Length: 427
Image (cartoon, rainbow, N blue to C red; front, side, top):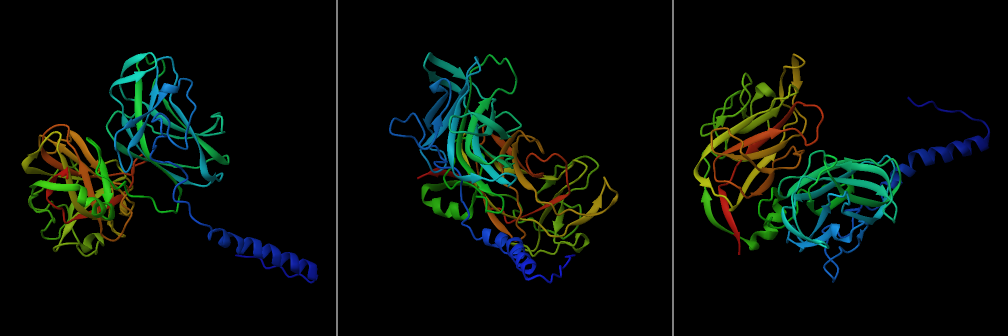
């Protein structure tokens, strides 16, 4: 409740009006400033003419060959940055002056793609066999590369092929430059290690986050693309084979703890299976995107979550690129009992979808694709692009917590109208 000041002196009244204006109107005016789409310049690491250095970036490594440009054609660009770490501890380090200052205590989304570098890499002292397993760190720094504040790092070493990483940062200092460097997960590592990075995005919380880059992904990438990007790139892909799914729209009688025909439960022992929705018992009333019903899955605060699986009519083959279209949403209400708190709870927190391939019922041998956080209440189309590194006879769909969440929570995910699994190639 506001305390209204009654003043008789006109000077006091004028001061009060000035303070009122500053407190109430200026914050609103500040929101009218242009939103910055990306604080990074040359976020895709396109190279200068010498093909050695990325434009807009400074190589601040003690050994210049710790930063290299590799022609991988990932995302929408030609080059990706390779950061090396040598057994003597000399690491690849890049510095950039940002498009604008990051304000202290503001929150920003940091999104990038990373992949482990494997195989032979040329260095100034000869060809070295390089493996992955590095950690990427982001610092507030000055133009010389001197580090002042650690902003973020990926908690798990990057050992896989291309995968999207999402972090939230909140600098304590005003930040005009950012330094990126790689680090060993353990000290005294005798190996040469490397990491590819590409498609950096940095924007303030509240500015829309891109769902995914819009190009056909390279081999072994795990990727999700918005429909607009898919439509923009359909001319670059050709469907050469299809694998139909059984009951792809999850049709059945609306009921709790029931898996639709054609699918089976892959959840935890002593936990209920997913639900056929909509169902008033959970206060889930959203109309289906297709047909009469859809699948509802939840994550729980007791660190359990739900999965369903299906045996494919034809195996996914190693080295082939596949596309799967589907619709995802979440429900504003998804009421169910919490085992942890022993009371009725609303399982409404956003979650992600993971898709696995395997060769036994419910076996999760390979993570094929993972979506960003599904925050939308309305049905939204998603496209998954993936490349198995082994043949897979089974497909498993799993709801999971937001990446890097410290504590499990009650959340929900709705799935409907899956397409055939389409084998695609570039035209």
